[in-house]
Length: 500
View (cartoon, helix red, strand yellow):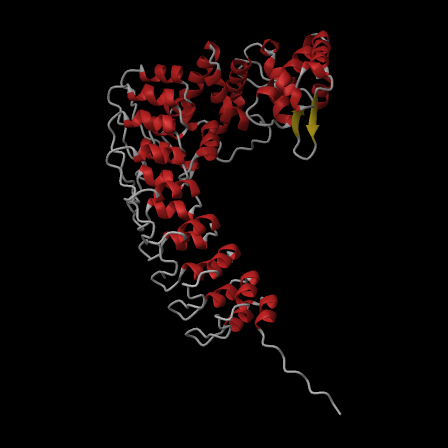
């Protein structure tokens, strides 16, 4: 957006008209523009209307203060529109967003005001009352979700004294507050029933958002347990590490009595979690504490293992520089970091590890499945090509059930990988598993018509091979009712002789 196009002047003139409305109209118009341009996600029309009705610091929500969306649109003088399908409010053009963010003087302390608004909403008597109801009806509080999830984001960016006091008030009984449940449902990765959560304290929440000033207030309280565990055995340090809150991590690590390598429900330490999420800064801070960089979780998965699984290339390089990291260490299922990188399609990590002498790229898991097999079954065509170029990798190694990489690719309908492997002369493309079921049989059984068609064009594949139960690929497709595959597998009908 450039002023040379006249848009800047046009926006400025419209904003002047909004202000000249005076009173509530001017306030609503400017406030609406502030919320839309600074919100963490698009706001629903009813969310915005309720946000603008909040009286900061008031113990009650006044429904009579909620403006209609029509009133808001009028007050905004054409600068705001409503997306009909999503019912979200938006600015009329992306250049208006640029203009509003460039002219910060238009709004007075936007983020602190938004934090104060969210916290006032959460501290209201109407919202607090939900904590005593097992299944509350939240229809009348449309701003509850946004307030619960994002008050801390705004507060971290600009924490006013008012917002700090409102946050501490929220934390007085935070464990039972409805906003805690909303926050944890949105961010918990353990599959735990958060309706039964406990132990998620104000310090957990402040660490989650990385609001150091509020954290310090908590830890100054005598006898406060800085290692308190919540329902998933996560400490405040776990949550700070999970969200990449470097300042919060440093603050917690400076405290006497902090346990930096406490395991959670999955046996994962803050180091595991930060590595998994790719928070390199947090990992560097934790490693400076002298922590074991190769510590396993309950599944024998190390921080390095998790970084490879998630494709965190920078993290992988950094951890490889640490003494004591075994880059070929398998987990409880026998899967190495390289195996997981191949299975998940993390090309960059695969290339990094292939440059190491201490990594076996053909090492099978406990079921005899190699990284190539895992990549083939998941359709990772690029990685399959890379691995097939390596002399030390066998392209036709079966697992303990007799299933080869080609078998799995056909079974799971990975047509691209099937075509790549069909070009190899060192692969038995008709090799059955221990039950006598060939790749063609499994492709037919699973309804992968494209793969079946490809395989039937090969001279080295027998379409009539029976499994140990005496069933052919045609029998398998017939049982499943795949008519297209049945047609492909049926032998040509004998020509009917012409009558004299």
